[in-house]
Image (cartoon, helix red, strand yellow):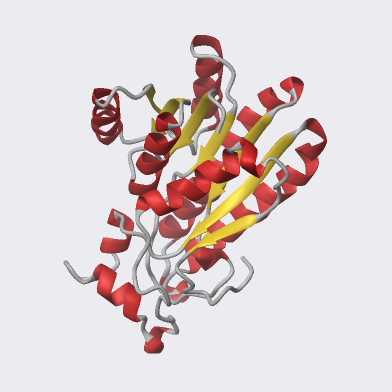
Length: 258
């Protein structure tokens, strides 16, 4: 990808941190955003210790005021944002009829409203410059039903649809908007879904009782697998790709369109 400024939300998490590293290694100045200030400082500390140009900006993407202040500060102090990666996300597991109001609202606030607020703030500044690229990290659950994941799946489906509609509207301004849809990935989120030490093997084997297919490639994704897909969609090599979803799940959804 070209050098420039890339803003990455959820940068204290597994996929977000990997995206921040990959983009910085490609020459971008990365603005790493997360509401967990301590974890963000730890991640950014490791990246800067490796000589990578990464800046920590703690912020809550569910707050309009916080997002506007963040983007304004970055544009003023660091420079124009060329790339945006929406990687912030939360997962609340429960059967749909047992979801609490708090589970539902928190999931939608982070996974959907956060994408809306951050994308709007950044793209409104990209439009006058007539350049930019955006990737939303969604999930293969956005297009494939999953037990106990109704809130998560709904939030990711909404974020996917929003990103595509946004991309259609701003294509005439030379701004590209795409989606990466990971499946089971070796992150704390996946490990929190299974007993200790069992996450990878359980994901690979699948669970017929829960209507989950096995993973044909026989392994879960690494955060870097997802990060490289993000990097590609932001790069000039993907310069004629927009409104698309790139699924990174080892074949778990059997090639079902996302």
